Image (tube, rainbow, N blue to C red):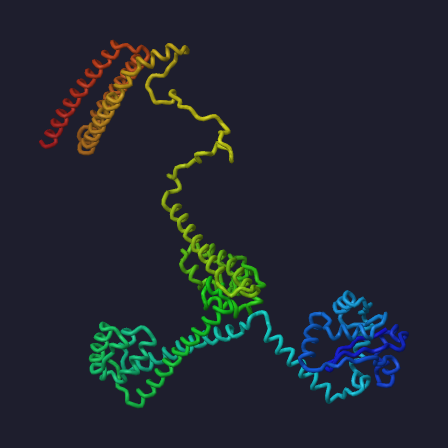
Length: 572
């Protein structure tokens, strides 16, 4: 049996002299306690030396991926003749077996044998001292780490992580320094803080002005608009601040210089971050912007790590504390994390932010995977998905407007026009609906069974239907008159409840009886007219109406007279 051993100097092939000693795995380490005992177990058969560091680096990178290099294959073909080969990696053994048809072994005994060979390596290989082996292994490890870092598939996004971290630190420092400038100079000119809200403009103004007495002589047109400039000069004359000496103003101006220099450097850093994001993650930048995309990459650790996350994780990335607190307390989980600061979610209404953040996170996950693992360098996918999300936002907003336009109670139920039509067919499932004349609102119902009689009655009923509107109008006028009369009675009762409470009650009861009898008579007349359909009956009905109207007029006149008499009595 042969043993393949990898060293920083090259590949070594050892011949096992006594395979019987390999049966006792627990006692195998004793055989490698000294160099003499180790030589009795194994013997160096062949050694393939690396010519330079590049060859060693390529062979090492292939071995990490469990692939034999070209030099290793030639070496094994030359020295392995129908013998089993012991290897340290089972995947490497499978690859050698497939390509070279050499039987490979990998088990606990082989691993223990490798451990013994490593302990006595310099003694078993002649011409490889310890002082040379240590620098070889160190140099190969350094070159291997540099190679991995140089050709990493995450496209060197560590610069983005560092840049966004520095940008956040600069924002904090700028805010602290600007607040210090406002507080320090506020003792001398407190009114300036309300006049100028922007921190950078405030620092520029303080640096130019110095003492507030110089404000009237100076020109601030390059820094401030005219209205603010005039307000500043007026406030400088009547300011309530304390006086400061030149040394204090000099230190305040130095602090203003620091604020302005930090703001300039922040602008340069933002431009650098923007350019790096457009090259490393163009699709993610098109969807969520430079700052949000950079924060997502920094929070995920790298672009490749972020590409492994699903859309639901991208959605709540940055809100881990709120998520676990909600799970612990059994409350609603958060709907968005760092992605909340994207412009698309900012445009949405508060009710729609959750839906848009979910859609945006799903598209952002696709864009991240395309940027991390795709070959293209354009942002066409990100722009296309952004247009889709904007269209979805408009659709959701339109749907919400439609819902809020009509009330829930008064909204009509709309039926589909083609609900009875088969899909893909021109015919209807059910028969077409026909017009039902019997459903019309007519006063006379058709009762005769024969078709001829129904036609005759329909013809005779036409004049009566023509007079129906006039009859309804008469009824409306009567109702109005009754309401007026009742209102008058109630007024009189409210005014005269102490005078004649007993005499009015029977009068109102009699009127109600009369109205009931009149209504019954009219309904009987109408029923007779509809049933007979004769013109004589209709004339009688008209006469009765006129008679009833005349009686009502007489009653109303008598009522008015009674009311006048009662008023006179009350006045007396």
